[in-house]
Image (cartoon, rainbow, N blue to C red; front, side, top):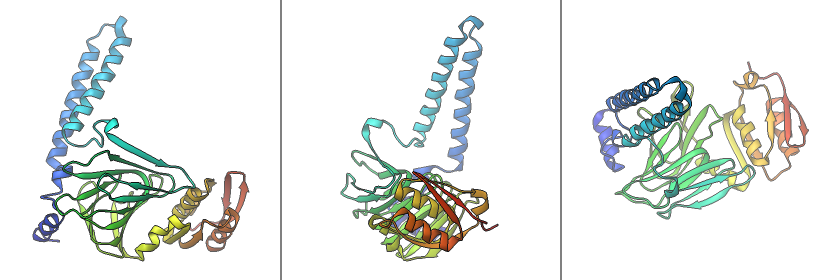
Amino acid sequence: MDEKNKEDIYKEFGISNPSEFFGDENDKDQLRKEMLGRITESRHLHNAKSANKQGAARKKLMMAMAAAISFVLLSAGVLFYYNSSDFVTITVPQGQTKLVTLPDGSTVWLNAASTLKYPKKFGAKRIVYLVDGEGFFKVVHNEKVPFIVEAPTLKTFVLGTSFVVKSYKSLSTASVSVVTGKVAVRDNKKQISVLTPNQEVVYNKVTRKPQTLNTKAIEKTQWNDGKLNLNGVYFEEAVLAIENAYGVKIDYNKELFKNCQNTFNLNARQSLKETLNVLALIQGVTYEIKEKEVLIAGNGCN
């Protein structure tokens, strides 16, 4: 994509340049230098203390380092939250989903085992933070104020649309799927995709490589009805979906199954045993249920 096309996209989303939100490489270098300088200065203060005051000096050092890092990150706009009292934190336990209404009237359905943070009131920017998990966002249209979802790996820009962000910390991939409208997606360095309805970008956290796919995006939202439509996913994702839906812990050899990839259409309205029978049939595994723990064994896919 050439620079002109990029600028057109930034203009459409009301963004003069992504560095406006995230900073360019020079900003990051300057940030690192300032952080190191402040930490070094704090260490010098520590070394100057006498031996019989080591306890007090150590405490002062930690406070100075924390203050220095916080000051630098805050001044660069890196910190997610300025004051925790100005934000709302929603955490959904396993086995549940929750509908959240945001300050501008936008809504998000949170999947099980998800955490969302957002300001009590939006200002010049509409930014929410998917700390962990999965959410189906329906965003109120506002051409002048882009809506941004920040997850640990991906950042999603929209004007007014519906889409799913999946970013569980325990998974090796993160994804964004568009139901309606258009979204721009970037990682921590650059824009990686512009998506339209029934398109999805899957981002590998290890290789840092994105893959854009065609998908039935509406199926990505049906976990709220107990339907777990997992198309071409790795085994770890199917296991996590079952854990979250049933509130169980599944133990298996992750190394042995890391290359296993299948499509799983499961129904959390069924019993845990019925769901595990489907998993066993598709993946060729055996299982044993011990109260809230499931043991899975098999040959894997290596």
